[in-house]
Image (tube, rainbow, N blue to C red; front, side, top):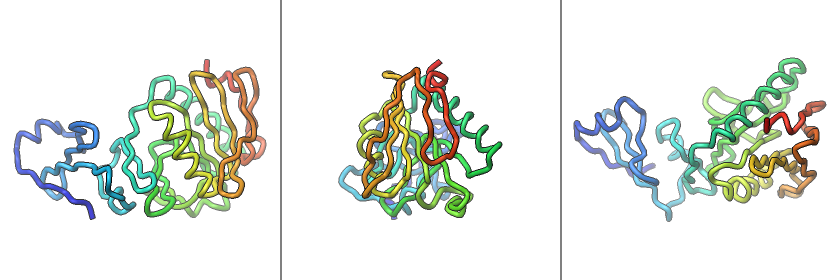
Length: 220
């Protein structure tokens, strides 16, 4: 269980100002728990569990990766525009073809007790829809998209390694600055590069049958 420090101070209500939590500084959160104010300090040397992660307030800017509560800064406007365009096109395709369900961040994906990630976009095929619960996705999505933004190393190294180990069939990594899209597929528990697409090219999904998109549509 988390080590929480209750604080009784009415002025903290003013600090929260009705919000579920407040990040005092990086690694330090203030929130209310069972009628008390709680100051929570994230310990870099502690291995956190999924149970501990899920006990924190919804919407905190952290993901659980390899037992570490990893800070994920707010995405850029460019990131959000790409996310909006791609998610819209995927949902439009799925509405017509009914081959699965797509969800976008922030959606918790529980891989195991030390890893709960929030991919930018995920897709689960019809045959695997039972992994989706009311609160989270409890299992491995068939397809994941990450858009590089504030924490590029986490997306490109930590999360890519996790997705490969867990057997995500297809992984798209989008670079808004270079205007490229890298397609990876999982082989022998590693993400292997399949193709790198540039702005003028059309991208075809390996997993969502017949879905494709002109890459320049995402960067307009």
